[in-house]
Image (cartoon, rainbow, N blue to C red; front, side, top):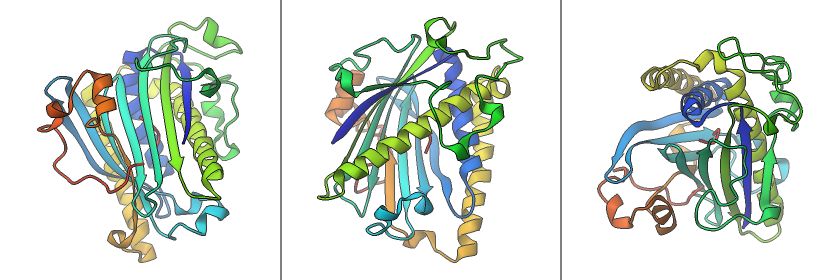
Length: 306
Protein backbone atom coordinates (compact mmCIF):
# COMPACT_ATOMS: atom_id res chain seq x y z
CA UNK A 1 0.00 0.00 0.00
CA UNK A 2 1.24 3.48 -0.90
CA UNK A 3 0.13 6.32 1.41
CA UNK A 4 0.59 10.05 0.84
CA UNK A 5 -0.88 13.15 2.43
CA UNK A 6 -1.47 16.01 0.03
CA UNK A 7 -1.83 19.55 1.37
CA UNK A 8 -3.30 22.13 -1.02
CA UNK A 9 -3.67 25.74 0.12
CA UNK A 10 -6.07 28.27 -1.40
CA UNK A 11 -6.72 32.00 -0.82
CA UNK A 12 -10.18 31.19 0.56
CA UNK A 13 -11.86 30.48 3.86
CA UNK A 14 -13.20 27.04 4.76
CA UNK A 15 -16.74 28.44 4.79
CA UNK A 16 -16.30 29.97 1.31
CA UNK A 17 -14.92 26.70 -0.05
CA UNK A 18 -18.01 24.83 1.06
CA UNK A 19 -19.78 26.63 -1.80
CA UNK A 20 -16.80 26.77 -4.14
CA UNK A 21 -16.14 23.05 -3.90
CA UNK A 22 -19.70 22.07 -4.82
CA UNK A 23 -19.69 24.54 -7.73
CA UNK A 24 -16.29 23.41 -8.99
CA UNK A 25 -17.06 19.68 -8.86
CA UNK A 26 -20.33 20.13 -10.75
CA UNK A 27 -18.85 22.35 -13.47
CA UNK A 28 -15.66 20.29 -13.80
CA UNK A 29 -17.62 17.03 -14.10
CA UNK A 30 -19.82 18.51 -16.80
CA UNK A 31 -16.82 19.83 -18.76
CA UNK A 32 -15.07 16.46 -18.60
CA UNK A 33 -18.07 14.41 -19.71
CA UNK A 34 -18.34 13.67 -23.41
CA UNK A 35 -17.92 10.87 -25.90
CA UNK A 36 -19.38 8.25 -23.57
CA UNK A 37 -16.92 9.04 -20.79
CA UNK A 38 -17.16 11.28 -17.76
CA UNK A 39 -19.19 11.35 -14.57
CA UNK A 40 -22.73 10.08 -14.17
CA UNK A 41 -24.46 11.00 -10.90
CA UNK A 42 -26.52 8.11 -9.57
CA UNK A 43 -27.39 9.47 -6.12
CA UNK A 44 -27.00 12.84 -4.41
CA UNK A 45 -29.16 13.42 -1.39
CA UNK A 46 -29.00 14.62 2.21
CA UNK A 47 -28.47 12.20 5.06
CA UNK A 48 -29.10 13.00 8.71
CA UNK A 49 -26.64 11.38 11.09
CA UNK A 50 -27.88 11.09 14.69
CA UNK A 51 -24.61 12.41 16.11
CA UNK A 52 -22.93 14.45 13.37
CA UNK A 53 -26.04 16.09 12.00
CA UNK A 54 -26.80 16.80 8.36
CA UNK A 55 -24.51 15.51 5.66
CA UNK A 56 -24.64 14.52 2.01
CA UNK A 57 -24.22 11.13 0.39
CA UNK A 58 -23.34 10.89 -3.29
CA UNK A 59 -22.83 8.01 -5.66
CA UNK A 60 -21.28 8.49 -9.08
CA UNK A 61 -20.15 6.36 -11.99
CA UNK A 62 -16.94 7.50 -13.60
CA UNK A 63 -16.33 6.22 -17.13
CA UNK A 64 -12.66 6.46 -18.10
CA UNK A 65 -11.63 3.57 -20.34
CA UNK A 66 -9.61 5.71 -22.77
CA UNK A 67 -7.61 7.33 -19.96
CA UNK A 68 -5.86 4.12 -18.95
CA UNK A 69 -2.19 3.64 -19.91
CA UNK A 70 -1.51 0.96 -22.49
CA UNK A 71 0.06 -1.42 -19.97
CA UNK A 72 -3.11 -1.36 -17.84
CA UNK A 73 -5.48 -2.06 -20.72
CA UNK A 74 -4.18 -5.60 -20.94
CA UNK A 75 -5.98 -6.63 -17.75
CA UNK A 76 -8.89 -4.14 -17.61
CA UNK A 77 -12.14 -4.70 -19.55
CA UNK A 78 -12.60 -2.44 -22.54
CA UNK A 79 -15.74 -0.89 -21.08
CA UNK A 80 -16.04 -0.21 -17.37
CA UNK A 81 -16.87 2.48 -14.86
CA UNK A 82 -15.79 3.53 -11.40
CA UNK A 83 -18.52 3.97 -8.80
CA UNK A 84 -17.85 6.74 -6.35
CA UNK A 85 -19.84 7.00 -3.18
CA UNK A 86 -19.03 9.78 -0.72
CA UNK A 87 -20.12 10.85 2.72
CA UNK A 88 -19.64 14.56 3.28
CA UNK A 89 -19.82 15.94 6.80
CA UNK A 90 -18.10 19.19 5.88
CA UNK A 91 -15.38 20.08 6.78
CA UNK A 92 -14.58 16.35 7.04
CA UNK A 93 -15.19 13.77 4.33
CA UNK A 94 -14.20 10.21 3.52
CA UNK A 95 -13.97 8.85 0.00
CA UNK A 96 -13.29 5.28 -1.04
CA UNK A 97 -12.95 3.73 -4.50
CA UNK A 98 -13.20 0.09 -5.41
CA UNK A 99 -13.14 -2.04 -8.54
CA UNK A 100 -15.48 -5.01 -8.67
CA UNK A 101 -13.32 -7.05 -11.04
CA UNK A 102 -10.06 -6.18 -9.24
CA UNK A 103 -10.56 -7.42 -5.67
CA UNK A 104 -7.04 -6.46 -4.56
CA UNK A 105 -7.46 -2.83 -5.65
CA UNK A 106 -8.58 -0.09 -3.24
CA UNK A 107 -8.30 3.67 -2.73
CA UNK A 108 -9.29 5.64 0.34
CA UNK A 109 -9.15 9.42 0.77
CA UNK A 110 -9.68 11.15 4.10
CA UNK A 111 -10.15 14.93 3.75
CA UNK A 112 -10.14 17.72 6.33
CA UNK A 113 -10.38 21.45 5.63
CA UNK A 114 -8.84 24.03 8.01
CA UNK A 115 -8.18 27.76 8.01
CA UNK A 116 -4.36 27.61 8.01
CA UNK A 117 -1.49 27.27 5.54
CA UNK A 118 -0.94 23.54 5.90
CA UNK A 119 1.13 23.38 9.08
CA UNK A 120 -1.11 21.03 11.09
CA UNK A 121 1.02 17.90 11.38
CA UNK A 122 -1.78 15.75 12.82
CA UNK A 123 -4.94 17.14 11.27
CA UNK A 124 -6.75 13.78 11.36
CA UNK A 125 -6.16 13.32 15.07
CA UNK A 126 -4.95 9.71 15.01
CA UNK A 127 -1.28 9.75 14.11
CA UNK A 128 0.86 12.15 12.05
CA UNK A 129 1.60 11.18 8.47
CA UNK A 130 5.34 10.48 8.08
CA UNK A 131 7.10 13.62 6.89
CA UNK A 132 8.46 11.89 3.81
CA UNK A 133 4.89 11.06 2.75
CA UNK A 134 3.60 14.67 3.01
CA UNK A 135 3.34 16.51 -0.33
CA UNK A 136 2.55 20.22 -0.53
CA UNK A 137 0.88 21.07 -3.84
CA UNK A 138 1.13 24.68 -5.03
CA UNK A 139 -1.83 25.74 -7.19
CA UNK A 140 0.31 28.59 -8.58
CA UNK A 141 3.62 26.97 -9.56
CA UNK A 142 3.20 23.19 -9.73
CA UNK A 143 2.83 21.90 -13.31
CA UNK A 144 -0.44 20.45 -14.57
CA UNK A 145 -1.05 18.41 -17.74
CA UNK A 146 -0.82 20.64 -20.80
CA UNK A 147 -4.31 19.63 -21.92
CA UNK A 148 -5.75 21.07 -18.69
CA UNK A 149 -4.08 24.48 -18.92
CA UNK A 150 -6.32 27.49 -19.55
CA UNK A 151 -5.11 31.08 -19.40
CA UNK A 152 -8.33 32.05 -17.60
CA UNK A 153 -7.39 29.60 -14.82
CA UNK A 154 -3.75 30.71 -14.57
CA UNK A 155 -3.57 32.10 -11.04
CA UNK A 156 -0.54 34.26 -11.87
CA UNK A 157 -2.94 36.22 -14.14
CA UNK A 158 -6.09 35.79 -12.05
CA UNK A 159 -7.89 38.75 -10.51
CA UNK A 160 -11.20 38.48 -8.68
CA UNK A 161 -13.56 41.41 -9.26
CA UNK A 162 -15.86 40.38 -6.41
CA UNK A 163 -13.23 39.84 -3.72
CA UNK A 164 -10.25 41.87 -4.97
CA UNK A 165 -7.97 38.84 -4.53
CA UNK A 166 -5.20 37.92 -6.93
CA UNK A 167 -3.05 37.53 -8.80
CA UNK A 168 -0.97 35.08 -6.77
CA UNK A 169 2.78 35.57 -6.58
CA UNK A 170 5.57 33.16 -5.72
CA UNK A 171 5.65 32.49 -1.98
CA UNK A 172 2.00 33.50 -1.63
CA UNK A 173 1.28 30.84 1.02
CA UNK A 174 3.37 32.70 3.59
CA UNK A 175 1.40 35.95 3.40
CA UNK A 176 -2.01 35.32 1.80
CA UNK A 177 -5.09 36.38 3.74
CA UNK A 178 -7.44 34.59 3.90
CA UNK A 179 -5.87 31.18 3.49
CA UNK A 180 -7.11 27.62 4.02
CA UNK A 181 -5.71 24.17 3.46
CA UNK A 182 -7.26 21.05 2.01
CA UNK A 183 -5.61 18.08 3.74
CA UNK A 184 -6.05 14.81 1.84
CA UNK A 185 -4.64 11.56 3.12
CA UNK A 186 -4.66 9.11 0.23
CA UNK A 187 -3.93 5.42 0.51
CA UNK A 188 -4.04 3.13 -2.51
CA UNK A 189 -3.31 -0.53 -2.84
CA UNK A 190 -3.07 -2.88 -5.83
CA UNK A 191 -1.60 -6.14 -4.62
CA UNK A 192 -0.86 -7.81 -7.93
CA UNK A 193 2.64 -9.12 -8.48
CA UNK A 194 4.57 -7.37 -11.23
CA UNK A 195 2.38 -4.28 -11.57
CA UNK A 196 1.73 -3.18 -7.97
CA UNK A 197 4.34 -0.42 -7.73
CA UNK A 198 3.68 0.91 -11.22
CA UNK A 199 -0.08 0.97 -10.68
CA UNK A 200 0.06 2.66 -7.28
CA UNK A 201 2.43 5.35 -8.60
CA UNK A 202 0.15 5.86 -11.63
CA UNK A 203 -2.86 6.32 -9.34
CA UNK A 204 -1.08 8.87 -7.16
CA UNK A 205 0.15 10.82 -10.20
CA UNK A 206 -3.40 11.09 -11.51
CA UNK A 207 -4.81 12.03 -8.12
CA UNK A 208 -2.15 14.73 -7.83
CA UNK A 209 -3.08 16.16 -11.24
CA UNK A 210 -6.82 16.08 -10.42
CA UNK A 211 -6.26 17.83 -7.09
CA UNK A 212 -4.15 20.58 -8.67
CA UNK A 213 -6.59 21.24 -11.51
CA UNK A 214 -9.68 21.14 -9.29
CA UNK A 215 -8.34 23.46 -6.61
CA UNK A 216 -7.02 25.90 -9.24
CA UNK A 217 -10.46 26.00 -10.81
CA UNK A 218 -12.24 26.57 -7.50
CA UNK A 219 -10.14 29.71 -7.02
CA UNK A 220 -10.18 30.88 -10.65
CA UNK A 221 -14.00 30.58 -10.83
CA UNK A 222 -14.61 32.45 -7.56
CA UNK A 223 -16.53 35.28 -9.24
CA UNK A 224 -18.98 32.70 -10.59
CA UNK A 225 -19.85 31.18 -7.21
CA UNK A 226 -18.95 33.74 -4.53
CA UNK A 227 -22.10 35.01 -2.83
CA UNK A 228 -24.20 31.95 -3.67
CA UNK A 229 -26.12 30.34 -0.82
CA UNK A 230 -25.96 26.61 -0.12
CA UNK A 231 -29.46 26.20 -1.55
CA UNK A 232 -28.46 28.07 -4.72
CA UNK A 233 -25.33 26.01 -5.31
CA UNK A 234 -27.28 22.79 -4.68
CA UNK A 235 -29.78 23.85 -7.37
CA UNK A 236 -26.87 24.63 -9.73
CA UNK A 237 -25.45 21.20 -8.89
CA UNK A 238 -28.78 19.53 -9.69
CA UNK A 239 -29.10 21.25 -13.08
CA UNK A 240 -25.54 20.39 -14.13
CA UNK A 241 -25.94 16.82 -12.98
CA UNK A 242 -28.91 16.45 -15.30
CA UNK A 243 -26.88 17.90 -18.17
CA UNK A 244 -23.85 15.73 -17.37
CA UNK A 245 -25.91 12.54 -17.13
CA UNK A 246 -27.58 13.36 -20.43
CA UNK A 247 -24.19 13.83 -22.15
CA UNK A 248 -22.82 10.56 -20.85
CA UNK A 249 -25.93 8.49 -21.56
CA UNK A 250 -26.53 9.90 -25.05
CA UNK A 251 -22.95 9.09 -26.06
CA UNK A 252 -23.28 5.56 -24.66
CA UNK A 253 -26.46 4.98 -26.62
CA UNK A 254 -24.64 6.10 -29.73
CA UNK A 255 -21.96 3.45 -29.22
CA UNK A 256 -24.51 0.74 -28.57
CA UNK A 257 -22.85 -0.26 -25.32
CA UNK A 258 -25.43 -1.12 -22.66
CA UNK A 259 -24.56 0.40 -19.32
CA UNK A 260 -25.81 -2.51 -17.26
CA UNK A 261 -23.39 -4.95 -18.90
CA UNK A 262 -20.28 -3.07 -17.90
CA UNK A 263 -18.17 -4.17 -14.96
CA UNK A 264 -18.18 -1.62 -12.14
CA UNK A 265 -15.61 0.27 -10.13
CA UNK A 266 -16.72 2.11 -7.00
CA UNK A 267 -15.58 5.30 -5.42
CA UNK A 268 -17.31 5.34 -2.10
CA UNK A 269 -17.21 7.06 1.20
CA UNK A 270 -18.13 5.03 4.18
CA UNK A 271 -18.36 6.08 7.80
CA UNK A 272 -19.27 2.68 9.16
CA UNK A 273 -15.78 1.28 9.79
CA UNK A 274 -14.24 1.57 13.23
CA UNK A 275 -11.35 3.84 12.21
CA UNK A 276 -13.62 6.42 10.56
CA UNK A 277 -16.17 6.38 13.37
CA UNK A 278 -13.50 6.72 16.03
CA UNK A 279 -12.07 9.68 14.12
CA UNK A 280 -15.52 11.26 13.91
CA UNK A 281 -16.43 10.45 17.52
CA UNK A 282 -19.04 7.81 16.68
CA UNK A 283 -19.48 4.06 16.93
CA UNK A 284 -20.72 1.45 14.51
CA UNK A 285 -24.02 1.20 16.35
CA UNK A 286 -24.79 4.85 15.69
CA UNK A 287 -24.63 4.33 11.94
CA UNK A 288 -27.04 1.44 11.61
CA UNK A 289 -30.15 3.47 10.89
CA UNK A 290 -28.45 6.14 8.79
CA UNK A 291 -26.65 4.05 6.21
CA UNK A 292 -27.94 4.22 2.63
CA UNK A 293 -30.50 1.56 1.86
CA UNK A 294 -28.80 0.32 -1.33
CA UNK A 295 -26.27 -2.52 -1.06
CA UNK A 296 -22.58 -1.75 -0.83
CA UNK A 297 -20.27 -2.20 -3.78
CA UNK A 298 -18.36 -5.46 -3.60
CA UNK A 299 -15.01 -3.70 -3.49
CA UNK A 300 -13.90 -0.24 -2.45
CA UNK A 301 -12.19 2.47 -4.48
CA UNK A 302 -12.20 10.50 -5.30
CA UNK A 303 -14.08 12.22 -9.95
CA UNK A 304 -12.70 15.45 -8.57
CA UNK A 305 -12.09 14.64 -5.00
CA UNK A 306 -14.49 16.07 -2.41
